[in-house]
Amino acid sequence: MQYKGVLKKMNTENLDTVQYYLDMQTDFINVNQLLHKTIAIKFETYECLSCGLEKEIYRQGFCKSCFFETPNAGDWIMRPELSKAHLGEADRDLEYEKKVQLQPHIVYLANSSNVKVGVTRKTQVPTRWIDQGAHEAIEIVEVPNRYLAGITEVALKEHVADKTNWRKMLKNDIEDEDLTKWQERLRAFIPEEVQEYFIENNKETTINFPVDKYPEKPKSLNILKEGSYSGKLVGVKGQYFIFEDNTVFNVRANEGLVVSITVLD
Image 1 (cartoon, rainbow, N blue to C red):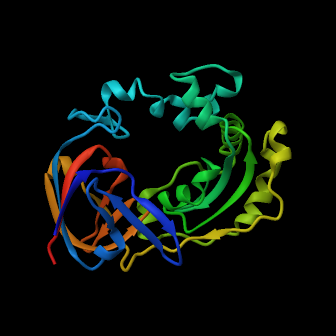
Image 2 (image 1 turned 90 degrees about the vertical axis):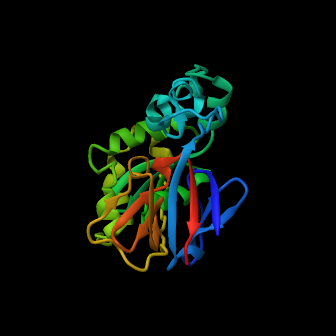
């Protein structure tokens, strides 16, 4: 069986075990059903996620011109503290920025390779945590816009990490943490104008990933360089395929690439 389409971030569903879905345009694959099967991935061409043209991907699934023009790739996406929609100021497209920035946002703690602080729209909980491969997470602040979440993250990352070590995450080299204690420990460092949005008496969310075997020494697959790869799928975590030979493939990092996926057995 063969599927072909442009890679986009996998959709997820947080059930007893996370369910992963890959939208291949004409097909919708439940990736969990590919576990224990040998699959082949082959690079075919490019397709920008913004303009849809066959142009080399620059970053985040966009061709170079779209990356510097589309509002979906503004600096405030990666740096929420740069959000300006609450001031009525445009970055690239004020109407789009109002729609995204002026809605409830969550500042959270997640444990994927270590405890880290992060920001996401409330509607993206727990999707954001799944994408980062976190096996436990907790909401610590809920604010009405992206800017307030951003300045909170900036303040807290002086006292806790804001990055995930992808190798540790994939190896499952993780210690359980009491995130409620972390939340209380960090409370004093939340900016004064955000203190009223602190979430009292919250509980952790736990996440179970469909992984049979974690890689001892993860090797990242560069499908552009290799052209094609085949291996037995033994797990999915974060946005990574995990193969039996320790090869891992980051689906999200390869957004905008058109690939064929063939189930060999």
